[in-house]
Image (tube, rainbow, N blue to C red; front, side, top):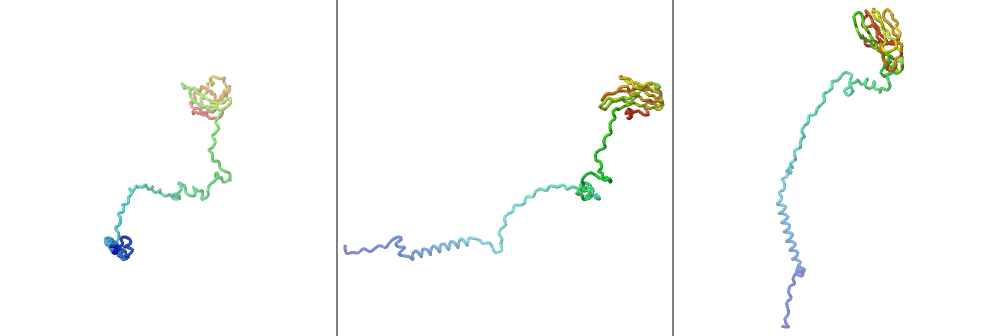
Length: 228
Protein backbone atom coordinates (compact mmCIF):
# COMPACT_ATOMS: atom_id res chain seq x y z
CA UNK A 1 0.00 0.00 0.00
CA UNK A 2 2.73 2.39 0.72
CA UNK A 3 4.14 1.82 -2.69
CA UNK A 4 0.94 3.08 -4.54
CA UNK A 5 0.80 6.67 -5.97
CA UNK A 6 -2.32 8.85 -5.90
CA UNK A 7 -3.63 10.23 -9.19
CA UNK A 8 -4.04 14.01 -8.92
CA UNK A 9 -7.64 15.34 -9.25
CA UNK A 10 -8.47 17.89 -11.95
CA UNK A 11 -8.70 21.41 -10.59
CA UNK A 12 -12.15 23.05 -10.12
CA UNK A 13 -13.49 26.67 -10.33
CA UNK A 14 -11.34 29.52 -11.50
CA UNK A 15 -8.30 27.42 -11.82
CA UNK A 16 -10.00 25.28 -14.52
CA UNK A 17 -11.08 28.36 -16.45
CA UNK A 18 -7.65 29.84 -16.29
CA UNK A 19 -6.12 26.62 -17.57
CA UNK A 20 -8.72 26.38 -20.43
CA UNK A 21 -8.92 29.78 -22.27
CA UNK A 22 -10.91 28.42 -25.17
CA UNK A 23 -13.90 27.97 -22.86
CA UNK A 24 -13.98 31.74 -22.19
CA UNK A 25 -13.71 32.56 -25.87
CA UNK A 26 -16.52 30.20 -26.80
CA UNK A 27 -18.83 31.59 -24.14
CA UNK A 28 -18.20 35.15 -25.40
CA UNK A 29 -19.01 34.13 -28.96
CA UNK A 30 -22.27 32.53 -27.85
CA UNK A 31 -23.29 35.67 -25.93
CA UNK A 32 -22.56 37.90 -28.91
CA UNK A 33 -24.62 35.70 -31.25
CA UNK A 34 -27.57 35.80 -28.85
CA UNK A 35 -27.42 39.59 -28.57
CA UNK A 36 -27.24 39.88 -32.37
CA UNK A 37 -30.42 37.84 -32.82
CA UNK A 38 -32.22 39.89 -30.18
CA UNK A 39 -31.23 43.10 -31.94
CA UNK A 40 -32.38 41.81 -35.34
CA UNK A 41 -35.73 40.75 -33.92
CA UNK A 42 -36.32 44.14 -32.35
CA UNK A 43 -35.43 45.91 -35.60
CA UNK A 44 -37.76 43.73 -37.69
CA UNK A 45 -40.59 44.37 -35.24
CA UNK A 46 -40.65 48.05 -36.20
CA UNK A 47 -42.74 48.96 -39.25
CA UNK A 48 -40.93 51.76 -41.03
CA UNK A 49 -43.15 54.21 -42.92
CA UNK A 50 -43.11 53.79 -46.69
CA UNK A 51 -41.05 56.17 -48.77
CA UNK A 52 -42.74 59.53 -49.36
CA UNK A 53 -45.31 59.05 -46.59
CA UNK A 54 -45.67 61.87 -44.05
CA UNK A 55 -46.57 61.44 -40.40
CA UNK A 56 -50.23 62.02 -39.58
CA UNK A 57 -51.05 65.60 -38.71
CA UNK A 58 -51.96 66.30 -35.15
CA UNK A 59 -55.51 67.60 -34.60
CA UNK A 60 -55.51 71.35 -34.35
CA UNK A 61 -58.24 72.87 -32.17
CA UNK A 62 -60.56 75.10 -34.08
CA UNK A 63 -59.96 78.79 -33.57
CA UNK A 64 -62.38 80.57 -31.30
CA UNK A 65 -64.10 83.25 -33.28
CA UNK A 66 -65.28 86.18 -31.21
CA UNK A 67 -68.76 87.41 -31.98
CA UNK A 68 -68.71 90.34 -34.27
CA UNK A 69 -69.77 93.58 -32.61
CA UNK A 70 -71.28 96.17 -34.91
CA UNK A 71 -69.31 99.33 -34.70
CA UNK A 72 -71.02 102.64 -35.23
CA UNK A 73 -69.40 104.70 -37.91
CA UNK A 74 -70.16 108.42 -37.63
CA UNK A 75 -71.89 109.79 -40.62
CA UNK A 76 -69.70 112.11 -42.62
CA UNK A 77 -70.30 115.77 -42.04
CA UNK A 78 -71.28 117.55 -45.23
CA UNK A 79 -68.44 119.70 -46.34
CA UNK A 80 -69.00 123.40 -46.71
CA UNK A 81 -67.01 125.65 -48.98
CA UNK A 82 -64.04 127.15 -47.22
CA UNK A 83 -64.41 124.94 -44.11
CA UNK A 84 -61.94 122.14 -43.33
CA UNK A 85 -63.26 118.87 -41.91
CA UNK A 86 -60.72 119.11 -39.09
CA UNK A 87 -61.44 122.72 -38.21
CA UNK A 88 -63.82 123.74 -35.44
CA UNK A 89 -66.30 125.39 -37.79
CA UNK A 90 -64.26 128.37 -38.98
CA UNK A 91 -62.27 128.67 -42.18
CA UNK A 92 -58.52 128.21 -41.71
CA UNK A 93 -57.89 131.87 -42.34
CA UNK A 94 -60.42 132.92 -39.68
CA UNK A 95 -59.43 130.26 -37.13
CA UNK A 96 -55.70 130.91 -37.29
CA UNK A 97 -55.57 134.52 -38.41
CA UNK A 98 -54.19 133.75 -41.91
CA UNK A 99 -51.50 131.44 -40.56
CA UNK A 100 -50.21 133.74 -37.81
CA UNK A 101 -51.37 133.53 -34.17
CA UNK A 102 -53.49 136.45 -33.09
CA UNK A 103 -52.32 138.36 -30.07
CA UNK A 104 -53.59 141.47 -28.31
CA UNK A 105 -56.72 143.52 -28.92
CA UNK A 106 -57.94 144.56 -32.34
CA UNK A 107 -56.18 147.69 -33.54
CA UNK A 108 -58.25 150.37 -35.24
CA UNK A 109 -56.98 152.13 -38.39
CA UNK A 110 -55.81 155.02 -36.21
CA UNK A 111 -53.38 152.71 -34.39
CA UNK A 112 -55.21 152.83 -31.04
CA UNK A 113 -56.62 149.60 -29.57
CA UNK A 114 -60.39 149.47 -29.55
CA UNK A 115 -62.21 149.01 -26.27
CA UNK A 116 -63.46 145.47 -25.75
CA UNK A 117 -65.41 145.95 -22.52
CA UNK A 118 -69.15 146.53 -22.28
CA UNK A 119 -70.33 150.14 -22.42
CA UNK A 120 -70.61 151.80 -19.03
CA UNK A 121 -74.09 152.02 -17.55
CA UNK A 122 -75.66 155.46 -17.60
CA UNK A 123 -75.49 157.30 -14.30
CA UNK A 124 -78.70 156.96 -12.31
CA UNK A 125 -80.37 160.27 -11.40
CA UNK A 126 -80.32 161.32 -7.78
CA UNK A 127 -84.09 161.83 -7.69
CA UNK A 128 -86.44 159.49 -9.57
CA UNK A 129 -90.11 160.30 -10.16
CA UNK A 130 -93.21 158.34 -11.21
CA UNK A 131 -96.49 159.78 -12.48
CA UNK A 132 -100.00 158.41 -11.83
CA UNK A 133 -103.65 159.54 -11.63
CA UNK A 134 -105.03 159.23 -8.10
CA UNK A 135 -108.68 160.18 -8.73
CA UNK A 136 -110.85 161.19 -11.71
CA UNK A 137 -114.13 163.11 -11.61
CA UNK A 138 -116.32 165.19 -13.86
CA UNK A 139 -114.33 168.11 -15.24
CA UNK A 140 -110.96 167.22 -13.73
CA UNK A 141 -108.67 164.80 -11.88
CA UNK A 142 -106.04 164.60 -9.13
CA UNK A 143 -102.58 163.53 -10.21
CA UNK A 144 -99.45 162.58 -8.29
CA UNK A 145 -95.67 162.49 -8.84
CA UNK A 146 -93.96 160.26 -6.25
CA UNK A 147 -90.20 160.74 -5.83
CA UNK A 148 -87.32 158.81 -4.18
CA UNK A 149 -83.89 160.19 -3.29
CA UNK A 150 -81.40 157.50 -4.52
CA UNK A 151 -78.30 159.54 -3.68
CA UNK A 152 -76.25 159.52 -0.47
CA UNK A 153 -77.01 163.15 0.34
CA UNK A 154 -80.10 165.12 1.30
CA UNK A 155 -81.33 167.20 -1.60
CA UNK A 156 -84.20 169.30 -2.88
CA UNK A 157 -86.14 168.69 -6.12
CA UNK A 158 -88.05 170.41 -8.90
CA UNK A 159 -91.07 168.98 -10.74
CA UNK A 160 -92.23 170.31 -14.10
CA UNK A 161 -95.56 169.31 -15.67
CA UNK A 162 -96.92 170.37 -19.07
CA UNK A 163 -100.46 169.70 -20.33
CA UNK A 164 -102.31 170.43 -23.56
CA UNK A 165 -104.82 172.92 -22.22
CA UNK A 166 -106.50 172.79 -18.83
CA UNK A 167 -105.98 174.78 -15.66
CA UNK A 168 -104.12 174.09 -12.43
CA UNK A 169 -106.33 174.51 -9.38
CA UNK A 170 -103.75 173.75 -6.68
CA UNK A 171 -100.68 171.63 -5.85
CA UNK A 172 -99.37 170.43 -2.49
CA UNK A 173 -96.90 168.07 -0.79
CA UNK A 174 -98.22 165.76 1.91
CA UNK A 175 -96.51 165.67 5.29
CA UNK A 176 -93.77 168.27 4.70
CA UNK A 177 -93.53 172.04 4.41
CA UNK A 178 -94.84 173.38 1.13
CA UNK A 179 -92.68 174.70 -1.70
CA UNK A 180 -93.11 177.25 -4.46
CA UNK A 181 -95.46 177.00 -7.49
CA UNK A 182 -94.67 178.73 -10.79
CA UNK A 183 -97.76 178.44 -12.98
CA UNK A 184 -97.66 178.81 -16.78
CA UNK A 185 -100.17 178.62 -19.59
CA UNK A 186 -99.27 175.01 -20.47
CA UNK A 187 -98.64 173.71 -16.93
CA UNK A 188 -96.60 174.51 -13.84
CA UNK A 189 -93.28 174.05 -12.03
CA UNK A 190 -93.06 173.09 -8.36
CA UNK A 191 -89.86 173.69 -6.33
CA UNK A 192 -89.56 171.82 -3.04
CA UNK A 193 -89.54 173.69 0.25
CA UNK A 194 -87.55 171.01 2.17
CA UNK A 195 -84.80 168.54 1.30
CA UNK A 196 -85.37 164.80 1.10
CA UNK A 197 -83.00 162.57 3.11
CA UNK A 198 -81.03 159.75 1.36
CA UNK A 199 -83.40 156.90 0.55
CA UNK A 200 -86.40 159.04 1.54
CA UNK A 201 -89.50 159.62 -0.58
CA UNK A 202 -91.99 162.39 -1.11
CA UNK A 203 -95.19 162.85 -3.18
CA UNK A 204 -96.45 165.92 -5.01
CA UNK A 205 -100.19 166.00 -5.72
CA UNK A 206 -102.12 168.49 -7.90
CA UNK A 207 -105.66 169.25 -9.04
CA UNK A 208 -106.19 169.86 -12.77
CA UNK A 209 -109.39 170.94 -14.58
CA UNK A 210 -110.34 170.32 -18.21
CA UNK A 211 -106.95 168.71 -18.97
CA UNK A 212 -105.83 165.38 -20.34
CA UNK A 213 -104.98 162.78 -17.75
CA UNK A 214 -101.64 162.14 -19.46
CA UNK A 215 -99.27 165.13 -19.32
CA UNK A 216 -97.32 166.14 -22.37
CA UNK A 217 -94.19 166.42 -20.24
CA UNK A 218 -93.26 165.32 -16.69
CA UNK A 219 -89.73 165.71 -15.30
CA UNK A 220 -88.01 165.60 -11.89
CA UNK A 221 -84.80 167.63 -11.91
CA UNK A 222 -84.87 167.43 -15.71
CA UNK A 223 -85.26 163.60 -15.83
CA UNK A 224 -88.43 162.20 -17.41
CA UNK A 225 -90.92 160.60 -15.02
CA UNK A 226 -91.86 156.97 -15.16
CA UNK A 227 -95.40 155.63 -15.53
CA UNK A 228 -96.22 157.60 -18.67
